[in-house]
Image (cartoon, rainbow, N blue to C red; front, side, top):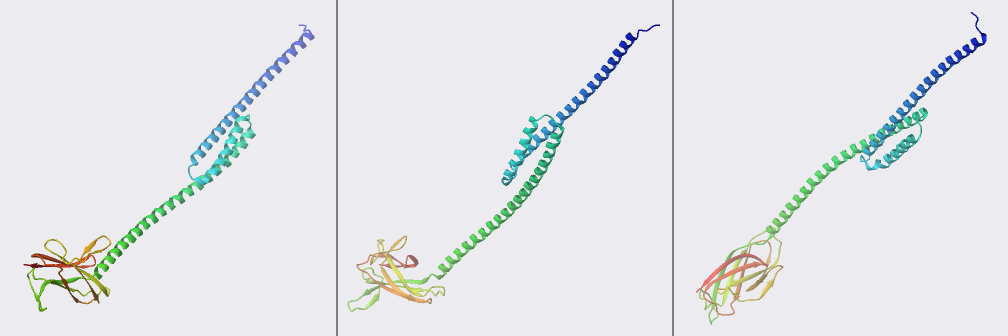
Length: 292
């Protein structure tokens, strides 16, 4: 069989081209597939990194309420992460950039961990201080109660001392007297003959009292409810006293008998006469006399 060399060469060239095309197509497909796989991987890594950054930003928002003193540090770190997130969104996926931003994210996570520890320390310190403040407050409340009780006890003691220092009296007695023309003084029970009324009482001994000159007021109230031998009224802080007689005595903490004669300035009516004795506005005691 005779083969034309030109035809053979032509067929050989076509075959070679076809083999080359197949090899080139196969290489192109393989390269395209590898490049597409690489792009998919980079995009996946980019999205994963963006998602991690978003979570970190969210965690910073949650940390914002831990302690006011950490707010500036938290805001600064959050701004850096937000800028990183914006930069990552704008750039094309690139392995070197992904590595770079991943390293930055790891550093920021470490900083976040330190801030969390610092915040926990602040919380622990605040909790301990709150417990101490509560304990101190309870202690102060107890001390205030003790001081209040001591004040009350002191006031009671002061009042008891004042009461204990007051002068008391006993043995109150009132006697009516008439006076004859000769000047002789006789005891009487007749209202028409009474010229004066003698009032006597005894001041009791009191070692707690203060030695001093004291004023005593004697008040005689007749059957008509009027004061006998009215000498006017003496004013006190919240009261006044109409009295019949005033006497001054020097009291020296020992028993002392006191006697006063009250002259009647007019004829007396028959009936009961009430006699009151006052130390200033404090009534020491009372007695009465019946005149016929």
